[in-house]
Length: 495
View 1 (cartoon, rainbow, N blue to C red):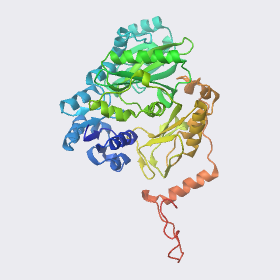
View 2 (view 1 turned 180 degrees about the vertical axis):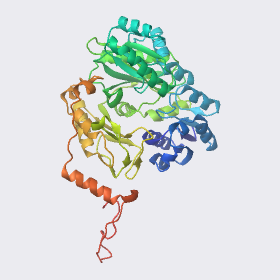
View 3 (view 1 turned 90 degrees about the horizontal axis):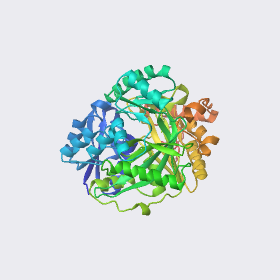
View 4 (view 1 turned 90 degrees about the vertical axis):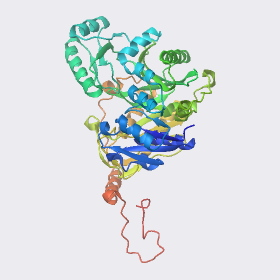
């Protein structure tokens, strides 16, 4: 087992990995940029290394600096978390070349699945069903012919893409030329690669992903599905497991397809195979494979009872994964809501500022993964994710009710959040019936308006603003002469 691990990430996922390391008796090294010098993940680690300016390319995306930090701190391994360099094959290879262990799949597996066009070709050869489409197109005429062959609507997307960037839905031939240009420009800016592919756009599909897990000894299983259809701009908002849509036989088919996809690239460690599912056709198609730990991994942990980060570390250290497919089962229902510092009323623009209050919900079946605390600054440099709120209950309807209560109990002042927005989604008949598709938010939830805050909420927010002057709670002034009066000197709690 490793003695020390450097976490090449920040925020909630860095803390999540550090907790697992503590439980395994492993020391941790945090890395931080200028903007994160007071961040929670820096305080949580055993030691921390400064790696550069706030801009990600000068800090969290700087491979040389990260590897040097691992060497200088005498770490044995690097865990990339998600985002940043987690799916960068060159980084995985560089870590191994530096005689460090990369906690994830091999560089070859990352490279094979990182190119959306090449991975589709590979999946076709492996017998995994793929969305009808074409790869390797260059001219407008080739795209036009492909679109006509497939039939509108079609999806133009970046071959090297991910995270919803470089994607455009085309409903008619008149929109194709502009969509290609916009997708190319966005892909080039985001990934340095303007190559595109085109495929059939399934407008009423569900986004269902299968968690896979393998070791270096040839053992490979799936850990069932996550339903991730509540999305805006191709970004997930709410995830759950099990899917309310899948019958047992279809779940088994998708799990087998995911294992075949992973086997095709000699996969080990944690990974996720993403599918789109058309309930009308009762058919599913390969979308892509994420060669890393997913943001929504906690829902899988809660329904399987497995700690995925523990096993990521153990597998990277050479241990065998001791479970066979027949050992694994889903228990109860889990839902995750991503709490973002963003304003739904302004097109989900990020909201920045100081967290004047940040009170997390508590109770049976409630879990919060966060990298923030009251008094922290939310900056514009990084993803606006404040926390992941996850609940677990015996039945789906109970999990929904628990999540609704937990969201109402999540108090955030100082920045605008999407909490009310998610509450409204959970209250809809479509969500309760499991009928939300990937376009549901855009097409059927566009009329949502921001609820007006109640008077007591405005008063509490104003008090928090006054008391948190300069980022520190100010003691209340008291003329009380009794030296034993507990209100004479008040701290954060009493304020």
